[in-house]
Image 1 (tube, helix red, strand yellow):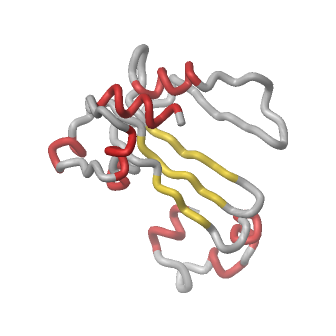
Image 2 (cartoon, helix red, strand yellow):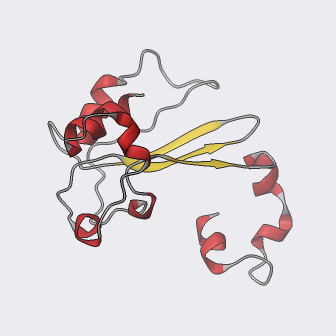
Image 3 (spheres, helix red, strand yellow):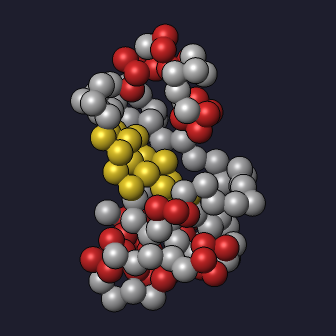
Length: 133
């Protein structure tokens, strides 16, 4: 995938296989200028959703990823890409996943999970999970 090639280039790694074992040091995690793509892939029986974060700006990893994956058609039911280079955050949310895109497989579909009334009860769901959902 394109994010593996970009991460190898930006992090100076020789092979994409190193991404799965590369653990960022605390210094690297706190380095706001370290240029790599991180995030997660959410998988269920209906959807595959990628949430990717990276250093923005011309020539940086997020810009390179977008240029290599420019949309070929408008958003539709089968494919949606949301990208806005003007939206930036000061901190990375997924730096604890290191340099590989974390895969999260759901037992039930996301729509079924979000439709279950119990997930909206704070007493039944941890605070972090409640905020995430």
